[in-house]
Length: 431
Image 1 (spheres, rainbow, N blue to C red):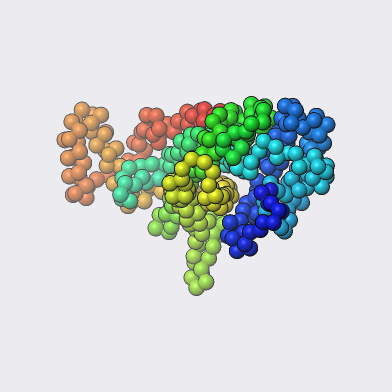
Image 2 (tube, one colour):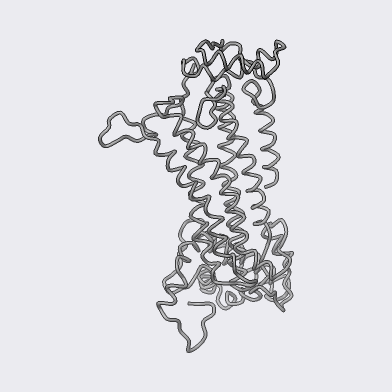
């Protein structure tokens, strides 16, 4: 069954298979939101007189029954039915008769799928936000617990200056704050109602778009009906940008963990059940989880570019190209949530080595400290730098770890965890 079918017309099976593609698979993710959009639309039709109140009430009751089947994972798209929109209308017509045939008044599948995707993305962005906040809280908590556990800091992968586990994890916590700024922007773009834009040029019916916006709890609506359709693809791309920012942070953190659990570093370790072994090397404890987080998140970072290539040269109006945004974006949403959850699992079971910097190979980490100590005693910086450099070249450099003293904001001795948490709370308020 196709909503656009006419008498004495048919479509080649090969063309139909090609054009439908993976739509049914992804339409199941949209079913809940398609029913929500239909309930709002039908309620509004009853209020503006395009359906009687009794008809609208019956249709809404039937739609709520369909929603219950979706909630209980009992909803499917039948063989021969084109998409989720057709399936919902078909089921409703079975329940309430010809009333079900009235619910498409003033709608096109174009604005149906547009509102479904906006509702879906709004919900999923919120779910990602919650997982990011959980990881943020864990990073802050673990960082504070290990704020006095020193680590070597690196530039050019050469030992540079003293750092700490608290400073390391706190850096990723603050990175997530900026990531959520982009995700919050995506949420605002998704939180606009396109319903009522029809095929992209509005309708001669007296639709009340402000009412459906209110019923669907959107923040506002896409006012211009042409732009409501143009927001397809753009909304997905903006969401992809926010997701790619989170993914970039996870990928970098995963890479750090791969390095730091390497035997040549040995800063952190994990239980056997969270690592994997080798088929021939019995000593191996491989960081497969971190490697896959890194790989999956690197792939997620390509999504804005994929979507750009898909929508870049399209003129205004609806185009079938938009169908492919779902297969680019939807699976990556699940992957990103899984990566966030697995990163939380790993870090909550991480064991940190103590007294790392007492190892002789890290003594030059404190060269800057020695220079600063001389400057504090009145020696000009360039002269102090030369003195310490000469002592290193002669093999005479020594430094007492107990002299380490950092106090400024965002340093080893002043992590500013409370301030970073306050910044996170500001961003969360934007959702």
